[in-house]
Image (cartoon, rainbow, N blue to C red; front, top):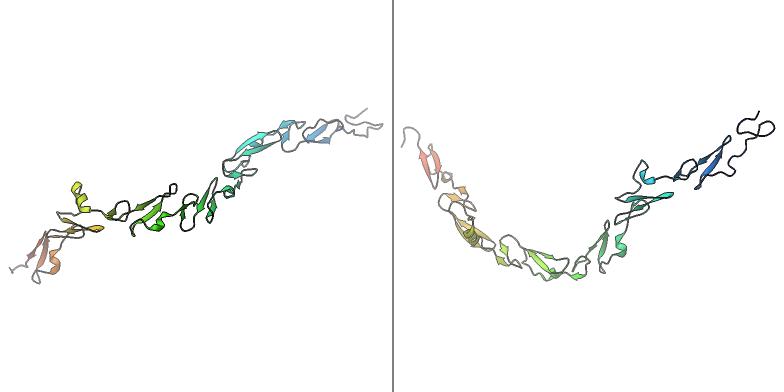
Amino acid sequence: MTLSGFTGPSCEVNPDDCVGHQCQNGGTCQDGLGTYTCLCPDAWAGWDCSEDVDECEVQGPPRCRNGGTCQNSAGGFHCVCVSGWGGTGCEENLDDCVAATCAPGSTCLDRVGSFSCLCPPGRTGLLCHMEDMCLSQPCHREAQCNTNPLRGSTFCVCQPGYTGPTCHQDLDECQMAQQGPSPCEHGGSCLNTPGSFDCLCPPGYTGSRCEADHNECLSQPCHPGSTCLDLLATFQCLCPPGTS
């Protein structure tokens, strides 16, 4: 009687079934009883290791990071990274300053997929390649001077009360009021001043815009013991009983 998988006079020999095995793609043959098993590397599967494992579909953390796209290939995969990222799994932020063109004397700051140039005093522009025209102080000393990073031209951000290309022109708030509501309330008269305006208030009103009722009772015009009643531009004394 012969036992399955053994040979020899006493059936004591287990023949090596791995002789002439069909394991593919680097699979390791493991001998059995009348058969063998293929131990496949991670990228292959199947009884003979001929089936490619789709690493992009394997459960677990994404193979490609930072928005990269996983593409399967025979025996492996590769990542197609978005701009600014590199490495096997798109985990590496590429140094965009390597190919940057910042002007000499400026400092390159690496971004994700881009870079920016930190300009030294007196230089401006996206690449610090232009002279900063704000050094000539074209704007009013209280205005803010800015430089167009593409053309190098200057523009002024005016302080309150001024207008014009260089912010030296006084803004007449009173003239503007002729086309809209007056800045002075309760019939107050508007008087323009450099960079601002004043309001001449009618009797009974006070405040920078004549917005507040003037309390005539603050001067204590009534006789002691009486009550002062504040009215518009005047007052009234309420006398205690028995007096007039």
